[in-house]
Image (cartoon, rainbow, N blue to C red; front, side):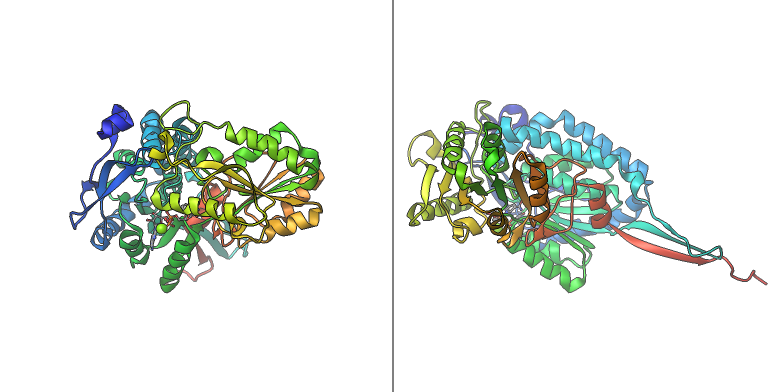
Length: 501
Ligand code: NAI
Ligand code: MG
């Protein structure tokens, strides 16, 4: 099957095969090697990308370094104007982008990929308006002194993004980095590069050459030399905690500031007064079942009060099993596929472990079908285990697949203790009609983002990031941009210096 047949012609035509963006030029890897990219719903190749390595990293960083002086000198409002043009152009190409993302990631077009493509444009639009906010302060040190601060860009940002929300996360690195006057070298994830390359193409239409460089390749071959390059002034990484630790170690060697957005195992606490259909919907949404739960904010540990435990799970299970799993490009599909074989095997491994765990009760789902149309791709089935213990591997490790564990509680103190008994701390969800109780719980949950009575996704403007091993730094917001992509300089002037004689 050709790429065109699989993707829909307008998106297939937009895919750039075998090239990446360095210094405004579309180039192959120096080695000439390529990597195949697969459609996980069909397990068939949709194209190939350069297998970038250290030499390509060196070229891209040199291009970004050369572009930095002029770009940082562009008046902030004019940088904002460029970001705004990028946002408009991305809006115009949102459907193409959505189709590419659905095809390469397996995320369903209607429920996921379209929203992600629109959000990518919105992120550029949001940051385009913030250039005037790169302000400093004056210090009141007396009439004889002028002491003020400036927000200066850092230089060349090195960014590495994963595959689960590739165009959203790419926009979230490029837009604030550029707004603040930095240039960037970003490595796309090897499983989901084509949407990112489309964003690179749009950026390259409006930003000067070298301001945005996008590399493709494998983590250890391309990501590591980028993270270790001496001319990178700032590292911004989204992905696994394991790789995040490596990045932080490399950053430490050169005292380079680092932002990390890592994994999660987020709690979702349902109080006994919240036994209602809208709460069931909120839990489905918090668990990101329609993204195959490949989300760092998935509310993957469900703490249900014992009084409502069985009835709530019955309704949740009915809701979840009614989700339509199928071809991500089919408008009827609610749920698509897992990204690749490695992740598919990992998710199935956890489900297999749950099935064998004495005491665990399978409420819905289980191992994926081994025959029929769903067995053609990396489709998994939304799965819920009940009566799990918060100590099991299933309840401690980030599965990054649609496996929800439901844990009963009687006492609120116990629920909060279990919720916080995790080395992660990214998100949390609380469902109850009692607002005082909800907010007390929200304040006690050790996580960077707690939602009450809803389980939605991030919006531009919202400082987002992790506690504990879920990461450091915040993105998505004005403060995130100022903290992550600028450095503060103080200038102190003595106004009483004697006149020249
Ligand atoms: P990963 O952390 O290995 O990959 C993320 C990015 O890092 C990719 O661009 C990859 O090429 C790059 N990378 C990998 N190894 C690297 C290295 N040694 N040096 C520099 N860059 C490197 O994540 P992976 O293997 O795709 O997924 C494994 C697990 O990570 C998932 O099951 C999930 O638990 C977690 N994860 C969390 C994400 C989040 O949004 N916080 C996103 C993706 C994965
Ligand atoms: Mg990996």
